[in-house]
Length: 226
Image (cartoon, rainbow, N blue to C red):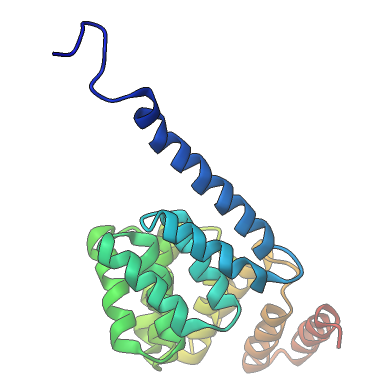
């Protein structure tokens, strides 16, 4: 019989999960520090160690996948995310990142399944709307892509990258005033982005405004260091 005021779990056992969490956070901090340094590849082993210690650590798995993607190890990044999704099938950040990577790998059907799954769970998820738009844009479905970019901006109205791709899509669709307005907004949000100035030059050229177009090209070259 357990005496009054006592617990069936020892103090050591009760403290173990807290210690494990603390150790996991320490390992995450160490791995993140290496990933942000001059030799990010050195963070691979620490991330692996963290996930061996705590396979369900969402932040650690997400950071590891992002690092692998940055190191051009996209297939391995997909594997890391897929393992996480086996444990947590509706983990939104895993789905969005995996969908984004699969899209760049031209595994379009799988990518679209991930992104639409997120949007079924969270219809107002702006990053998923953007990534779906980007996927459709890559496939040449420009009108559908533009609709996704518009929806993404409803929920995240100050995203310069989304305005850029919306401007590009509208330019392809021949909506030059709409394209110009979108690119102007992109430049307001990200005034130092060289490729946005180049896109504005292309739009202005098509609007028969060559002098303004040349100014945009010039500013883009300056920002690109050309």
